[in-house]
Image (cartoon, rainbow, N blue to C red):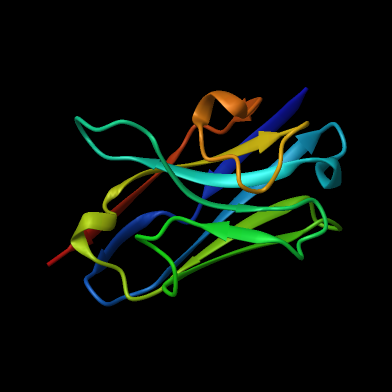
Length: 125
């Protein structure tokens, strides 16, 4: 069992930055592929970025490539998402997720085993 708790969301103006964190507890954090997803009102949950267990492999949705950076600190059992050049269309609840048996290119929510409760990110125009 893995427990995930996101933090760092908030309200920011377009063009601004935020850094999300996801603290993990339970089974070995370093064994999991970790990812960020987001869900806007009335829309399906969508993939944002994923990172392999060692942190050397990453994968991004086209919509955030070049603006967002995913990273992890296995010593601190923490996942991060640095979000720069934010746009109003980035407004959503952001979730971290853990995938025990997956690969970094898993973009389907059903492939992930554990989820956090989400943190709201609102970008004003």
